[in-house]
Image (cartoon, rainbow, N blue to C red; front, side, top):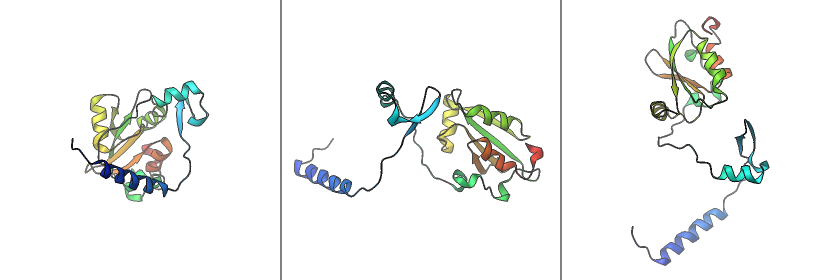
Length: 171
């Protein structure tokens, strides 16, 4: 650890305070799950709010590079990404045992004709694979083409269904 003069530290604090004075924005509404349902954190009682303040956030190191398939364009998937008998795919499904949104996605994907693998992100191997792909939420289904290139991601059954629009026999 290097020692810095007080004047240098005071100058840095002044620059930071000046930069913060120019920040514009509005209050952010935070929703979190409490006893099985989502609710605005600011409406929680004192005990639940204190519990929330002690939670540890799920973080891991990876370089996050957003791609076209990670946005709202999942619903309007390009024709080349649609699953069909001419466009074979495989999937990797990332889930948690405590995830309330995972069972419907798991059921949907199990009723398709495509093959894939389930990763439990609560295990070390599942977490490591999720980290490799930059996955930060469960459920996530990553679809790969025959060349192992990612062709899309889906986070719920509606987004997943968009990949099967042209070929309902695969669903």
